[in-house]
Image (tube, rainbow, N blue to C red):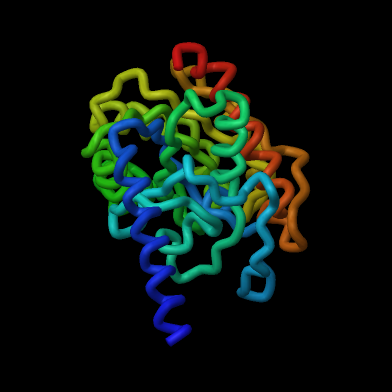
Length: 264
């Protein structure tokens, strides 16, 4: 009897949460999270397992929601990309800390903050070009995120580690990124869509500085760059630690608020 009662209470709580998420469908400020593993999050992952520790800045809040792989809004929680970057073990990324910092700065008047996870680990920027599976999925998820209302406020992009392996990819990074931004703005029908990219802290190959030069040299309007260089890496010298992901999320939030938050 006790088990039945407990299950009933849990169902009622879940239903209430889903109702609250759905009730604010038209009042969301939406952010697309895209790129590769350091955006998807590997903080706290060791030996193929996530230890489950969630920093205070990444705790769930009723005003932070995520679009699931099934295209349903739900309360956001770590790991944000667990059902998106499948086949890998996801941990803490920058998304929740970003959302927490934006809401801390803006308060309740900001409304609901919606996160749309799209990042996939181990991907080169060429795999995100217009017409590819990853590009099409990003556009599909972004389009679905505003179907019932809300506004896409920015794309947060952290990618490029896989483009450091050979010089051709590294030297072509700037042009490929700029083309990606213009294609997304066209296909999402938002010619001024803000994009905040992250300059690499690490890479899989020897051409990290070449990719970073391209990232830091982008001059497109409404494109900002946050530098991850100097953030502490895990033992693999590739992925950010949990605390580094938190710091990055706060950096991204401050960049957004300083550059694009004045009109909100």
